[in-house]
Image (cartoon, rainbow over the protein chains, first blue to last red):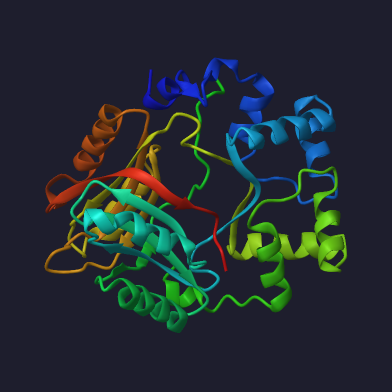
Length: 170
Length: 165
């Protein structure tokens, strides 16, 4: 058994993965891309799966309510609109929460992770332009008094953006 | 494609409003594009046409269900960083990016002397042991071109939202 199918056997928010029904699994795995750009996309999916539009909508609402899906919608390519960078800082432990809270409050920050490393705070900044990005980097350094390491993307090597949840053969 | 080339992809103010209206997700109603169109004072056809155009030009990489991998049991998220020769990075990066357990794979700027790493690959698993096995596979792909690497596990997700502009 590979790692992904093993992961499926563990709990999701307290319930077992095996409790996901086939419609839920199919929506999660097979509709990560190509949501129809038609007037009635959910009815189109329902037709493909042999269920009703109401069942598709109720299932998606339920998955979203339980945070098993983040959303249904477009996923934007970084760098195509505006610009972004991965930034990192060495934050003393006692200041980590306050610095993290400050960063999370900035609208330009959309991912913020604490990591097990002496460079312990890692976040992605997105901005409308290089000048805007630089201004945000400067503002963070100034407001925290901590140096910010900026690691922009030079090339993207990953082309398939869906993530196979390996349920098809179950 | 290099980020500089990507900057040439132009979008107008209506596209920008459409991105802002959809980045948190589409409404889960029978006619979501019509709902958006009403909110934005556009026609539904224009909403669909603009989304299709951004999809074709690569501004949107996909439209669909966005699973929450953390809730699905992928609790361990490792950012693996590798120092590989610049001459080989494109070829090696494509091989690593093609591995099924790698969700993101980028060449990033080095930050010498303390941060010599130029290849980043995000890996996900249910346990640290699974992620370590994945890292071994990446190490095998890179072979003797691996001049050093580190794995940074996340201890806390402090903020995670879709792209915001």
